[in-house]
Length: 245
Length: 245
Image (cartoon, rainbow over all chains, first blue to last red; front, side, top):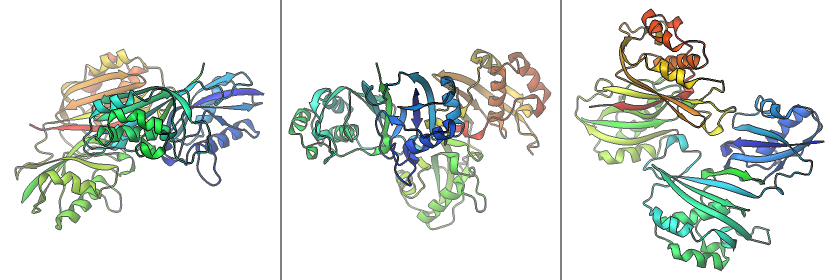
């Protein structure tokens, strides 16, 4: 069996998340249906990780095994010709048989986009969180500087998440202003459920003066979800890139 | 009666163009309905110009007369609270009673966005024309340089357009590359029906080598729509700005 790695990009607006669910339109479901049409046998898609309903991906990565002899460079074309236009295969590569999109991932990059305009940017309404409040970005940058490192991120993980070990290594939280847009890019070895959205929600509260930047270390140490800020909405979040060796 | 100028932004994807049409969703129809709810009397909206079905606007300008005493700075808020989310009022201003969004306009800026990536950029699929063919942008720039000036643009106007005088002054046609995106920004005192889309369609044929840059003056002089290139699709076009004194 050949092992094919695909890089995919999707607009999460009309998907009920990445993972297959009965009777719901999901990324995995749509892609799997198309791949099975092409290869003529059942296909099991392995994703680098799930994305929630409404979350987008610029560079999600999946792999699947197949007996198909379709040349590797043809995979994007044969998929895209019949995929819905909110899901695009952007690259394909043949990988060793034991390569695994999730287990081989060395890290991920997520970007959260905030629209600070007085009124929503109509062209980014589905891809950014409109947040027109007065905010001090310098304070947000100061707060973000406390987050990178190897920490127990329980305070920044959805409550009741059934993962035992909540220690993760976050390598960067970068804020960038461009006109009315503010992006928060998080890079790390791994992320917990809702982690980026809670980081962003917390930074927004710092920006508005509800949390002070020097409270961040105590919020981390508390290991208590209630200490961090709200979960920012899904539609501002994009899985930007999955990092492999 | 007060005269109110509104700047509006819309995603043209789900509108049947700007101008009111019976039983169709249009920008003018949606805005007029909302304004009449607010002011409690019939409202007649004057636009700076129409946009076709599928064409977007970043900064379309309209005006309307009203006896309403709503303070001018409140207009965006009272409109946006009930407008659909693909239509946003971004600014309001009280203008002299005889000010007219179309007659007072001194010029317009349109931007056409081309996605040159091998596969479509899923986040720009509704706002750019995916054109993954090999093209020489230098040749397109060379061709574009022949267009500014005061010319009879009959060759760059939809055939059978019932406007007699097809002389217009185009002040700039600027091409800009940013990664996989190529934008064509046209600035002029006035535009004919489909003019920007035909300019872009022609430049794309120049880019592919089907038309040479030095043929542009002869195409202009021919005053024959058949001599120019095809009309590029509507969804790549955005009315960027309307210029007033």
